[in-house]
Length: 93
Image (tube, rainbow, N blue to C red; front, top):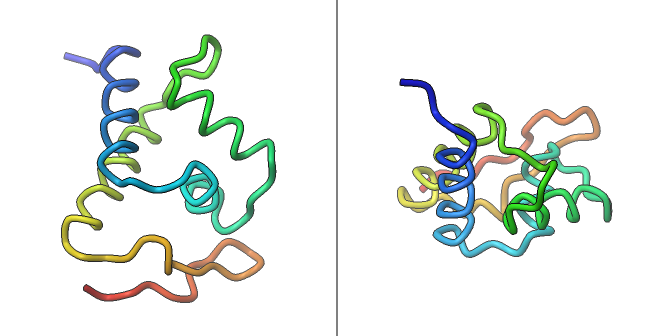
């Protein structure tokens, strides 16, 4: 059975809460190191379930992967990217 928009929203919100990151830090991770006010507002809108800010299947998957990495001890806030969006530092747990 395919996931519904409600299912994906619950995944996103649950993982956001579980991660305990500030919206700016999550926005930085989701945007490959780039952070703008717009990126942060999009994360805030999605966390708050604002109309028109649906959660894609890719976003729901990524949030679950981030939660699993955090459970394994990875310090997500220390992940670093280069100017092209490639990961340059990924802390090992």
